[in-house]
Length: 424
Image 1 (cartoon, rainbow, N blue to C red):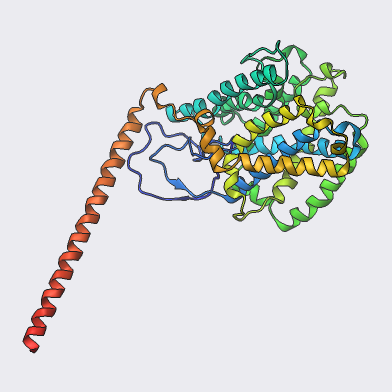
Image 2 (image 1 turned 30 degrees about the horizontal axis):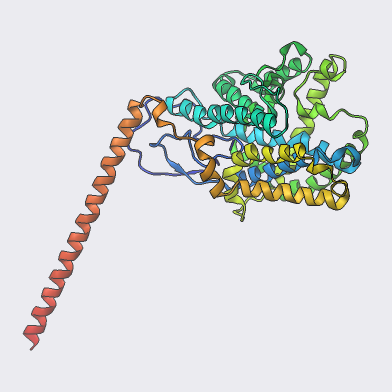
């Protein structure tokens, strides 16, 4: 999930990295919610956070949580079906584009590989184990198995992010990365032989959004945040909801999940590439409109944007628990007020799961340090020693200034007493 890329505040560097990345922009990990700049080595400049990206991540995770809460209620509500179709068209692409944007600096440097393991692989293993166990014991499904090769429910994103980020250096080498990624996604959508291992259909069909994020620069996000774009976003979203209303009764909404080929969805093979290309265009348009309405300044919820990974991984237990416990079966929840209540509740829960106490509680499985698992990096150790030496020197200089100031004050006092004695 998702550190902002704003002009860094320069500090004197103690020691250059052992293997400086070529052509990379300093940026930290972008997954749904990262609170630590794991990709930045300790000697790199400290960067100020751009509130826009944290705001975008927070608002996107609200859409994810609300979309999941709508799923059990949408079958007998056409308006909700249209809203569901619209939200599912762009809410994950909005996340993935930002993830790609902040993966631009990723290379195979040891500190970044460590961060990839602790921030993506470990949470994947933990939650890919926890969700099937939750279904087995809470959902009364004793035959539910645990398989790290078959992502279940929300964990597909971590699996996909791991694969995408490993391939990031390759996408920076090819001449036309986005057309190539689109071609791969279109071919995958017509290839049922890919199967379900590692949810590769989703990995490949969502790949163009990640590659697009790798290709973007800060000015591209600024272009969609103007007043004219915000005004145009209103009729675009209104038109999208109207089209969703028209399509909802007959369209298979599984197309928006991107987890199956055209043949598996009962369509001819050629429909896969056509729908993939159409969905990419619609998702890109709606994502741009979404970004246009994301606040650029620091808001009350900006800090929550650093915890969206926690909300993403944890809210699924509540949604699935509600489904297993038949909470959504109450008739009044299927009415207009019930849908509003469920939506507000989902947004509130997602907000609470982004807060600091929750992050502190679950950091051991979501962003573990795991220093014990890795051999020390000599360059990093050298940077640490140099920084410690600089801190000690700065502390000694501060103490020396204090001594000089105390000595100066003593001398001033002595001169004052001498003048007073002469005057008397």
